[in-house]
Length: 159
Length: 295
Image 1 (tube, rainbow over the protein chains, first blue to last red):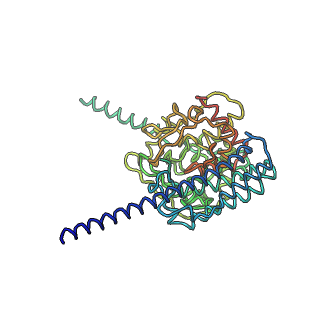
Image 2 (cartoon, rainbow over the protein chains, first blue to last red; image 1 turned 180 degrees about the horizontal axis):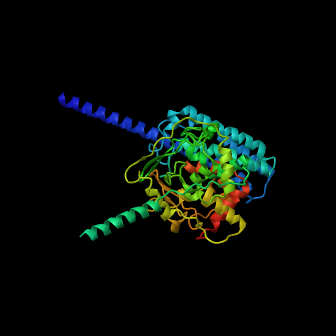
Image 3 (tube, rainbow over the protein chains, first blue to last red; image 1 turned 120 degrees about the vertical axis):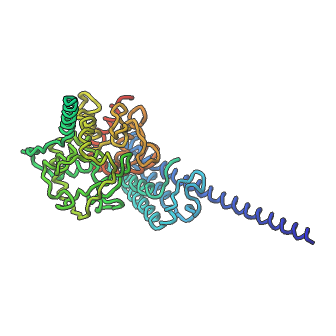
């Protein structure tokens, strides 16, 4: 009887540990995937900004249609709704590769506003990029400022 | 015996006198700016290039409020913590009552109107390169900015660094009139040198310091530890940074690196200042950096 009780207890304990372990690995996987998706979003933004920047710098010839498309895709990438990407518990230190500051969650309004600033700048860029090179150059400043301001407040240091 | 005492005493007096003389703050040049006409609009650009806002705006202020130069930002160092003073146009707590010669001596020589040395946390060794016309315009512009009655916070600096007279010796040793990039470069590089070594005072962060806090000119712009204790401020000579001139200009304009990451930390502030300058000035700074040794 005594032995049965102990075995039951051990069994229950084992099940609990296994479940917690499963839950942990499950949420860990989700957290990693979210961080990966955010990085992909940033990469899409950087890629399209790079097309515009190459023209602004004179490294590539100005192409109104290409500039328009790059700005449209930049705006689309910047407009992803944040709640599926910025999962709680995915800050720097909690998930490998994450540089998200805890302030994103403690100051979600500020973070959302920073994101909106980028969306405003990228929407303006959609109008400007296809107009002419000077307008495109002027648009770069607004996008750059939006990126920098948000990174300053909500991105942690490189390790 | 008595003669020995006399000699020792004489030496002491002589030494103290010499020290007193060497550490004496520069006298006021009452005729500074005589004959020059102040242009506040031009001064706004000098103000941007000089990065005054980055240190003197109240911490955490944003937008238009950045132009209220109430001070208060702390600067940790090996010698203690310095606080940026109020340099708003307030007559009591700011610089509203200063004359142009007083302002010029403060900015280019690091001496207060009361005749006290400033700590070199204020980059007057860089501003020493400023042309009188630019100082005159800057002063006129700053008088148009709002007043703040916030009192300046005293520096938190211990002995012996709290003896300001000692800074006179520091200046004798380390405040140099010469440019680090010596010689007679072309007009664009010369303009970039004036901006980078003078107004924009790039060396203050990007050049390592010696034990007395003076910039090591032999390692000019080759990078330095971050005074915040975290990380390193990168070297920006051609030996450390292989960005093209177009990359540098874009960075100064929008803050984008060649990888289209954004400028961070203090540099984001610098970019928002440099972005206000004419493009030719940003190109000049880029040309200057490319002209540094190591290319």
